[in-house]
Length: 284
Ligand code: MEV
Image 1 (cartoon, rainbow, N blue to C red):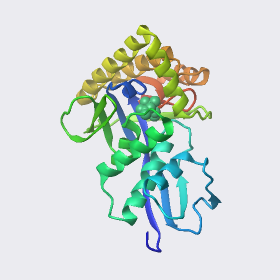
Image 2: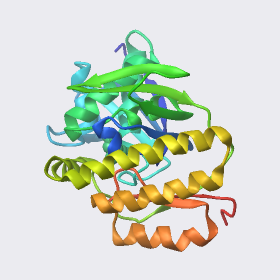
Image 3: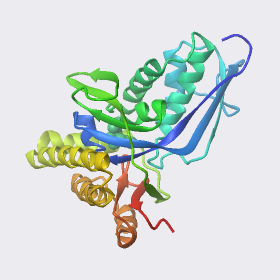
Image 4: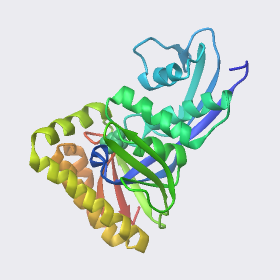
């Protein structure tokens, strides 16, 4: 990294359907939204984040990105339009933006390489992950992750026995409202909780399968521009996620308070806190 500043930014994302089940190889749909996280890097005397020295156990995503690139001491500066732990992909966005800046400082930015590396960093930090967050924050636009390769294929990512084909997804014009509970919950423990449930309970496995079916139905409804049906499926997905144990009192309250004005609503991201998303034509 020669003595100059490099920068990159990445968008926040909202998962419309399929979170958690996607970790087990089921499909998921997400969209990038107009909030961004910006990252700058320059050589430093020690590695730091926003002027504070990075200890070995601090900011695991940032440290893991620097380690992945064997980066010399680096000063990392970030600035974000959205809070961390809000379910909007802040970990994925900081990972993607930092890896993109590190790549640009060496041999240039390549989208699929950054998406792959960002997924590896998420797996390292979170232990289990799918590529939905990192691919959305890398590519932007709409993203469909599914097992089989389909139209508008971007890249394939696999880990252990699981495989995800990542696609660019055409998104119909729609209005989303995001409600943050104000409570931040790390993704790793929630993903682990669902895995324990699924490993020990066939009923939980059926719920994961059903989330997969609801998601594929939603993809077809999106293609037809049928927002009413898509919204109904989002609400159904919320109920299934609640059965998996990743909703919360605040999320359920947000969802039920917006439903009279929405086609549908659900938690988005890992849940436990974080945010709710509503699909509506009455955003006010
Ligand atoms: C978190 O935004 C989405 C999860 O499905 C985890 C993942 O896919 O890595 C809960």
